[in-house]
Image (cartoon, rainbow, N blue to C red; front, side):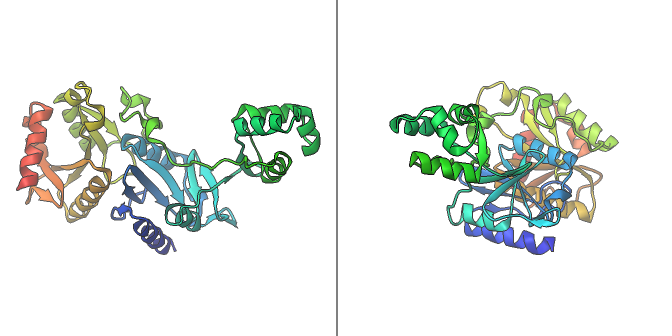
Length: 332
């Protein structure tokens, strides 16, 4: 069932003009997709209640590191099917069904309604509401009386940031004879990222990485920190961290900084498959990818993922030497 849903989601995103990664086969997000400046990290599952807080936190962390928007796509919540063109939320991540995804990215139809405790709600354009009310020479009390709500509620609508039920919103539009229901923006805006990672890893949303690091992971990521990388660990993802050369951070070239999807593994056949997945993700997210391997390496690159032996890493002195090795192997 999940496999069929993933196929539908990938087909929709490709029809909408997205570059779509391979399926990740991890507990976290299932795939990444990019169209122009929009990057998505999508978790896809039949019932959206199947995602827990720990996994949601890990997805949000990875999304923030990669300047992406996390999204959950499913078919049901509990025993009920997700309604079309309604946005739900799971632990701070917007959740929608495949129909809503198609309408938004292929059909250009924006959602207006979101689900929260108690029912379905919409947001009101407070400035437009105030302008329309004053144009009709109605007081807050007049509007409140017609709506059957308190004067304070009407005042909150005008102040902005207050939501209301669909019925009240439609009645308010009828009273004021103007469109007031706002489009629901559920994707992260580029301005929210400020084109950079936080100054410290601890400042990233979901900073507590729940997945316990292995001794090998701690050893390799520790070595990368020693040679001058800032490490933003991830959990339940195909890669173990997003690495950033500190010298590049200090240059102030915020929008041009290199991000490296960093995986850690022993050399196995399964590692080759993982390297291909990380390569696919790096292509979508416009990053570099590397797999630091404990053991003998029979090749130096898998797709676009560069392989570096743990022993080689230990001899590297700075980020520049590391990136030069990556570039040389990528060319080869």
